[in-house]
Length: 532
Image (cartoon, helix red, strand yellow):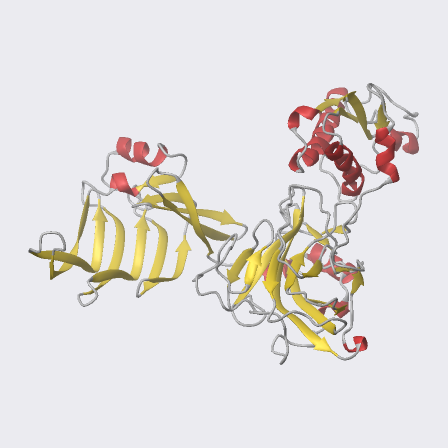
């Protein structure tokens, strides 16, 4: 361990903990700044008097009251432009041990790269840097504080992307890839992004003059691409990109509604009755716990804004068929034809499937979501449909058509009176666990739909177990399972005060517990109407 610095530990603790754990306020710790300056003369615009100002140049050190170096910054002064910019390294050091926390490298004022060495929140000037461990690497988020002191999100930098090659060391993943992977998905697209008549603008995401590095939740940084909902992410990493150095990432499934859509303004409107070949390359992120078929595209005359706080009503032009996009180490091709209605000017990409329609396959991963990287999008006019091999299904006959929700399972809730209850079929958990299995989401979608359309209804979700296991254990487990169902509903917009949960353990069996079939029947979740 590095030698302890000369310092007042009381002050260190005060200035690093007053903002929260792992927060270091260099504004309070740095008492002096030492370095060389270049003088230049100018005329005051107010008084007309000749004045002298100084530009920081070379290495500058931010030191504490005992002359310990806390911050090192390198500058380059330009007398002609009367300005100075960061040029070289900027280093933040631990105020107690002197270890490096964050290194940032600049070239003529532009940030080229940066690396974090441990989790921390750094406050310096009006900027906040937050480094945190994101899977196997550190992500660095940057904020600026306005005059009120409120932090405004600026950008995010991933020191390295999740290493997709690490998954090759996981035999469970390799087994699943072999079982569910479709070799046709990893064949090259029929037409490249550089086809002469590719209607997609900025198809490889390489034009981003406002983004010098990866950005979480991009908005206007990429030319011709915009957000159509919760904003997706931009990654700049030549090592991980399929072509060039940039690609995007977006979420198509999670327990919450933060599904992401992005849209492209095409080079020109599509021609009526003309046939086009759409293709894109996708790769499942290493951290995703589920692979899915939740991918589609919509071609429309007007730009779209999809409200993910409400049930999805719009149908895509095409959506993926039953193919599961499960490759984490290879880019997968999704491709299909589209016959234009005429005038379509916007291409919207994302998931257009609700929880009931999803197909989910669990894969090794830490995050309960399906998050995909995307590269190389093309939309090319073709003469014959057979020239574009398709793995999509046609979803709608005209662009104005919307989804409707009518389901016989939902109807059983409509007939329930206050005090009546029903078993929620197909709600599944691993043995002795409380985490919902993916097949449960289809059944829960009916509950979600019913509660969304009946805002005055309040319900009780109760968990039940068989007699296997201790009484107290079963009571806790049954409550956790009921709370898992409630959490899903809460995350999808159902207010907390509309749902009560209770765990009954094995108190109320509906079948004999001396057979395996009876035990399975007793392990259940029930839905009860409390108020209408």
